[in-house]
Length: 472
Figure (cartoon, rainbow, N blue to C red):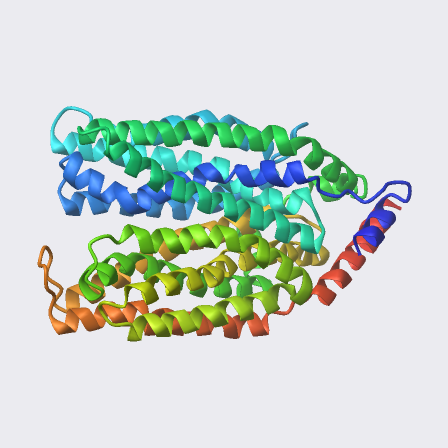
């Protein structure tokens, strides 16, 4: 199908295949996002309260204001990057000029300034919002490159696997760095400043590798696409509200949104409850190893996911991966204290489903974008990726809220070594039945998802004919 598409655009050109180096450079670009996001998710609230000396309510407000800003920031950057026209393309200027501010503002988040607690509160509000701005202006255009580096069904799955694999590697590396630094740096303020600076430097380097490693291929692909589009089609602009209407009228996109949201919620609920489950139900001192087993093994599962997708399609892979994950969640609910070996085995088994939940929805998204282009004649990757990224952040916030509310209502006692039976049941419910229901909802939506491999091939064929007609 790729050959047919390329031939229809340029009969003298060979199909533009993605070199392995380009895939690798693209994947490395998400390492920084994985590191910074994981540090914020695991440590920022603790840092604000126990190191910076801000009360818990104010610390929670810092995080809340960042999420509220994201609701505006993400779609806005998506639309603006779609409309950007430069000699370097639409995405690369956004990424390149955001790299240094992205790293510097992340460092600012882990510095404790002098002054009153009120001053520090507003300092972290400003630092957090600034970081979220540059995170979005670098990461959102970066993620849309999946659709701009290749139009091949399977190569996009490759790119998504590389991206998410390096993201998980970055997330684990951040935890490993924190563990290593904590054994040598006693002053907690210095510890977090050094950890934040190290992750910022690695993030800057990874994004630079991505920009310079992928740009030559992206330029060739976009030149091939631009050669088939009329000037009027390239210059036409659609108002923001009309673009939103088009996005939400895309039935396939709504299915992808649902698949991703339910799977991501299941993942966040499970991740946030694991420490409570490990310590209070399984009666283990260290909750780091179970989380490391899940995330670390998920990286290794990316390649099998990619190979399976080529054989059985994205939907087939999702059914297989999430189906196995359901069994794991049931096992965790019935697991008893002392069965530590079974706990670790289930964590490893869950990694296949976790990798599937990461890969498949993001690999489906470029296909949805092409369906939109076929219907409208416009490519609007930015706005589609913006809403997916926003949902990822909403999933994290909602997951943490649900777990916290459940523990509060069940009588969970902070700082207590032994929890009441109601609290233990709530913990087990959120490690088992709740994620199970969410995953079942994602499976139903995946079954109804309309873009199969065959349908996608037809879309590309029609797009090739449409572009050739515009050119003629």
